[in-house]
Amino acid sequence: QVQLVESGGGLVQAGGSLRLSCVASGRTFSRYAMGWFRQAPGKEREFVSRITWSGTMRYYADSVKGRFTISRDNAKNTLYLQMDSLKPEDTAVYYCAADDPSSSGYDYWGQGTQVTVSS
Image 1 (tube, one colour):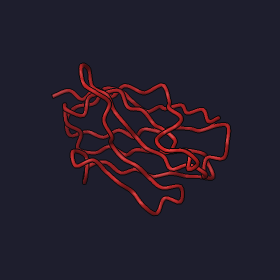
Image 2 (cartoon, helix red, strand yellow):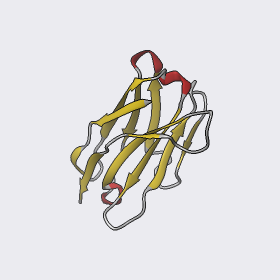
Image 3 (cartoon, one colour):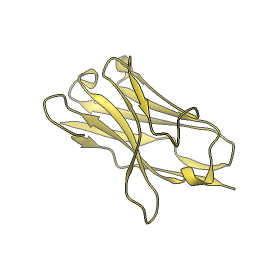
Image 4 (tube, one colour):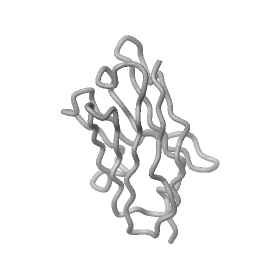
């Protein structure tokens, strides 16, 4: 079992920045690839970014590429999402998730943190 707790969300003006954090507890954090997802009101949850267990490979949705940066600190059991040049369409609840290599898909999810970008 892995417990994930996100923080860092809030209200920001368009063009601003936020840094989300996701702290993991339980099993070894470095075992897992990690991802960020988001869900806007009335929309389905969508993929934002993914990072491999070592941090060497990173993937981004086209909508955030060049503006968001995913990173991790395995010594601190923490995943990050640096969000720059924020747009109103980035408004959503952001979730972190852990991908256990022994199974397909993301196995553990955080409770989410709200990001609101005003125009």
